[in-house]
Image (cartoon, rainbow, N blue to C red):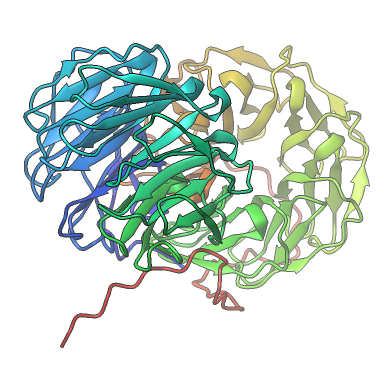
Amino acid sequence: MFTASVFPQAVSNGWLWQNPLPQGNPLYGIHFAKDKLRGLAVGSDGTILRTTDGGFRWEKIDSPTKVALSAVYLLDKENALAVGARGTIIRSTDGGKKWQAVASGVREHFYSLTFAPDARTGYITGSNGSLLKTVNGGVTWRTLTSGVNSHLLKVTALDALRAAASGTAGILLLTEDGGETWTQNTLCDGTIVSNASLLQNGTILAAGYGGCVERSVDQGKTWRRVDIFTKADLLAAAFAPESSQGVISDANGTIWLTGDGGVTWVPFAVRTSPRIVDAYFADDLTGWAVGDNGLILRTDDRGYSWQRLSEGGREDVNDVAFQTNDIGIAVGSRGRIWLTNNAGRDWLPAYSETNVNLNSVAFYDGQRGWIAGDDGTILRTINGGASWGKGETHVTQDLTSVYFVTEKTGFAVGENGMILRTDSAGAYWEQQESGTRLWLEDVKFFDEKRGVAVGDRGVAVTTLDGGVSWQKAATNVRENLYSVSFYGDKTGFAVGENGIILRTDDGGQTWKDQESPTSNSLFAVTYFNEKNAVAVGELGTVVITDNAGENWSTTPRFTGKLLQAIVYRGGTNVWAVGRGGMILKRVEPLAAGSYAPAKLPPTLRTRPRLDAKPRKPAITLTDDGDIPAALPPKKDQ
């Protein structure tokens, strides 16, 4: 179950993270104080997370920057620094609650940050060979000469004199005089060296792309390749302080362990094969790791097993629908369906009987709904989503959108111009000839006869006879169109690739290009009253109009992730969903306009529309296939 009750609510630019928790932006760095209780994690869009209990509970901290933060370091319980893009250095003196900018005098992107055990000598590395040093705990920094133009991705310091920096083009730099001079090594056949580790006995380990591990036992004078029998890119490396025990993560989601200073490595699988990009060990047993989609992990057994500190699934959420301001449903990759009865504070996984990607969900009323997915999949429910059964489509093409005009009649579109129609409430479907072999991405109908579908390369097709025949409409664009929405049966918008926005005033027969405020692709649009519409897309883009499309404007960005769908029901009842399990809800009104959809001509109905009611999944999923959740250690009585 996704639940918002454990973590303090993470809010960014008026959006509240409902899943994952505490938030879902990628995390790039993690570090803990020596007490193993106080920790910080940083990531994209200026994300800063703070914990005081070893990571079992996190809070999102207001950040003074919106750039990606790549590394963080706690000098002690109170003093911490973080670095990121565009020469960003920020510093906290209260354990990470508040942060202030520190002048770097550099505009390069910073990738890594480290300190020697004296907590005064520190280094920052970044793009184009940028290298900085502090001798006063990060209060001030001065530029050093690295002698290289390669991006320096990771830096580590053994003491005040000895340090190492690794990066692109196989670069490994070593210093034994506090950074005044650096010895250059080229390792891993010139590919990326993502990490270097300095051990107390003079051993140096370098890990890089293509499964490369190189080891030196004479402080870098000679090197020997260690074969760990993988070609996967190695991403993060971490060794316990003054220990020969360490871990490396790879791009396939495997964790590699060594207990002998890197002579031998043993692979350990982690459920869901997460992409771990940074790890930190406080002692031989206790470590933490971070990665994509806000994932935070902890180990208490040297890295043999990992438990999840962050909450909620990380499967892509492809579509969302709300029947009321409280009752909603989301669908996503690998057959995932989630239900909510309380406006998204909790999301309950429902059993779908399939592992294919589910791409679109539509409800005719509060009880009867349908889902379209890959491999010709159609699912249907008559109890608000508590249980689902399959419809018979007899096709294998991926289906991207489904829409129902009555409780019996519906349409689905998808791959290679596929259009299906049902008159049996989704039990059986028949294929229609669309006149195109381009992918159709979305479909809407005004009544049993009149409908519009849009798709790739600017294709738009319309029907006036319930799909018996379809005619191409002139859009005069070549961009892919991903979504269409109407106010009434005349005025509508279609959005798509490169921020394209089209408007029609004749039910989709003709379209006009609108001036768009973004070049980012838009994947969903909803027209929620006569004047207002909103669209969402890649890089967290949200665009809105309050004058029926005469002007569109962007709203402040809150994530760099891809948004796939949006529901607008007025006020703060607005939800956006997307990649990596992302579900967000507004805590401030997105627009001044209320939710007032146009009244369409009545359709032939045999039964009245049914109200939505709270429901529970008919089959309880006890194992969602994710990494096991971490449990706080029991306190001694």
